[in-house]
Length: 313
Ligand code: PMV
Image (cartoon, rainbow, N blue to C red; front, side, top):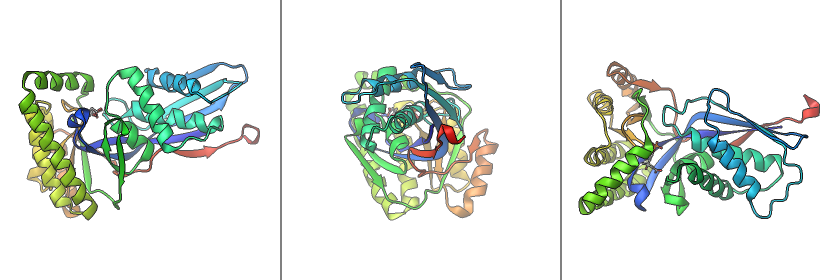
């Protein structure tokens, strides 16, 4: 029996533009999802996702794993149990985390040596099978962990070296539809290709500048770039009143910068906050109707939690 866990994610900068070939920055968060896998002697495959009723991502990951060329597994019976510390409502990327954790668990259980890149590629392909779109930034965060400079499809996966990120995360309480927002932006781009193209270029420039400042640990400057990024997201029409309320509250209480994180429309906002202002900012976001999530950025990527031999249980 094998248990692995994978982290959730938060988009730091570059959402939407990343779907058009531009880079983004993503961080893994320490809310984790576990997958426990064990052999089943009857040859069946069983999946238990607990309260989460959507098994499509696990099913797709299993299908991809067993369809891989060069993997010859005689007895494919396996039971998979997934449990998450976070719900799929928040936008922490439960589908990417479960896809990555499933592939990793199966590779260990069946003794197939997969590199991180193999896990990423397979989990990303499985996710595309299910949802048809996505840059894969969430899959990269679940696989590699840490904070990553990322280009769609994994054309670039560059881990950024840093100690900790002074991040505060506020949940709006509103579930956003990534697909709907992605289509909304695509339509906007179709109607106004030059303007939207310029916005994406500008966002890409901010991402590149932020990357340099993240490596320098200059969070105040990164905060400024986040603010500019938020203005462009507003122009794209993906912010919401609730997000703006929480972002405004963070600013007024002393955050270095704040923006929405992910597709927009709801889910979470993020703020970079000086340590001495942390409590005030948390109180302000809460007073503005947000739920501050007790998460830390730059968490570890998918890893093995324990290896338990059945006969020793
Ligand atoms: O809504 P989320 O947290 O899954 O973020 C979506 C980010 C997009 O750039 C809009 C889509 C993507 O796959 O990169």
